[in-house]
Image (cartoon, rainbow, N blue to C red):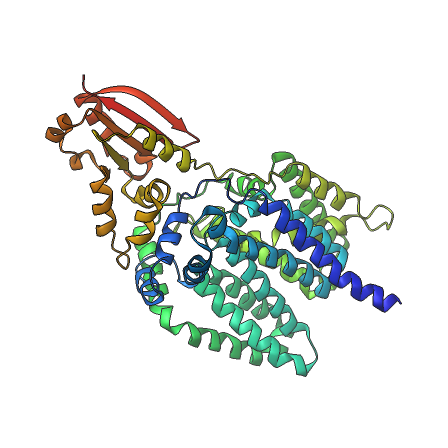
Amino acid sequence: MLVYMKKLNELWIPLGLILANLIYKGLFIGSNSVAADEPFSIWVAQMDVPSIIDFLATGNNPPLFEIILHYWSEVFGLSAESIRMPSLIFSCASVFMIYQLCLKHINSKTGIIASVIFIFSNYHILFAHEARSYSMLGMLSLFSVYFFLNLIKDENKHFEKRNLVLFTLTNTLIIYCHYFGIFIILSEVLFIILSPNLLKKNWRVFTISICLTIIFYLPNIVVLYNRFIDSSQNGTWVKPPSLNGIYNMIRQLSNQPVVAVLSILSLGLAFGKLLFKGDYKNSSITRKFIVFWFFFIFFFMFCISFVIPMFIGRYLMVAAISFPILLAIASTYIVKNKNLKLIIPGILCLLFAFTSNPNETNKRDSKNAIKKVKELKTNNSIVYLCPSWFDLSFAYHFDLDIFSKINNKGSKTELHKALKQIGVFPIWSNKQINTDSLNKYERIIYLDAAADFSFPKNGINRMLENEMQKTNTFHFDEIYDVIVYQHK
């Protein structure tokens, strides 16, 4: 009877967690505007698969997510709800893997606590609501670690080959999903190298796996090298971090400041107790690796960002996905008394739940900004967009037919021709404005999507103000301004 009940719990608990994650994060999946880099991924996904691979080889995105999105959108369409559903599915798979990883390698209570923290994390809610690769990256990170722990801990030779195959497959997929997936593999390699007993026992099977992963990644390895060289020589759009960036990132992973403070205190108390009692040597391999996983990637990315900036929330997914498990381990370790053991983790779970927002904003209200442009636009008006790469967001919300049907294997020439035919001009500088032609129109509409951030010397507003009279400004969320100009 006890065995039966145990098996029942192993089935219903993860199913309940998956259902909770699906409902809670699915409630407002289409609420935010399709914005930022989402239109880029959706637009690329409309190409045929060979074109997706060729086009993304020139940029910073491996092709796996867009290929999945390609087949998904062919069946389910391009609505915000549809196009984000894969990310929600990956999020549900993540909560399942968090629980399974803890169930097999720690215990079920830790798995439940970590899963609850994950479900109510605003950080993870945002990525479950975004048609980008980050939710998938988090899921694959969990799969990689799960099979990694299986590989180094399982004594059963029967399962070794299976774990080897699944571990190799997962690590191959993770770097085809996102280049920063390599940090997961790097953390696993270093953990083995820094653990002499594990290295002696597992070096052969681990070397085979890494070599196979490299072989499977050979088609894209030149692209990875070129992107690394380009980023190191030319920098990135991300700014170097400040010293308070560490707290700000923990704050981002913890919903609100009060939760961040309690999270930091829990981690501090757990480490203090660990050092004071000298329990580290007796800690399980799993607990040691979870600690190493989060802190190595977190601080490595922080330090390297002073040279090649990369310390922002989305790029840290490879570390952030371990944060709920780390918190669950730390909070259950602080108090050993059986009657009081769950007080701190219980408070943490409640605080995450109370500070969670299933309708977390992406701070990009492009849909309503473009809707306002559509309301203002007449046959005798012209629209300018800056930055120029906002063309995809604009086309998606302004005319989905233009967005979806005009895609010449990555070239925007035909897209821009179609936009110009309806009086819409993506620009990056005032030099692209023909002042002589402004007299032809009774109204100029300028959509400023944080133009000064992307092109600090664009001078568009200044030129339009000199030539015409500003009659109205409409502000949307944090970065969008729709400005209306008419003749003086």
